[in-house]
Image 1 (cartoon, helix red, strand yellow):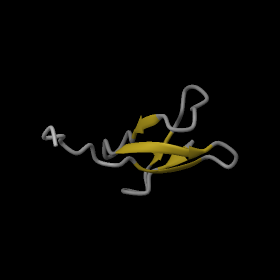
Image 2 (cartoon, rainbow, N blue to C red):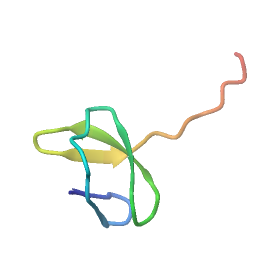
Image 3 (cartoon, rainbow, N blue to C red):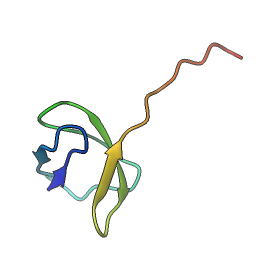
Image 4 (tube, one colour):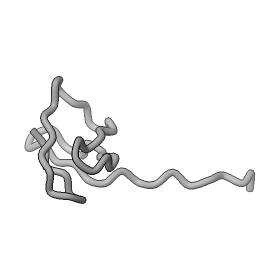
Length: 54
């Protein structure tokens, strides 16, 4: 189980996550990035910025 830093909702995981994996909050649909496994910590995933070919 993981707690969303955005809405404080709890999401149950069906399988063991990997570091760097992106999960979705079941309550607010925020994208969460797995930071560490022991203890399990997540943070809001960084927004993907557009690449204008620069």
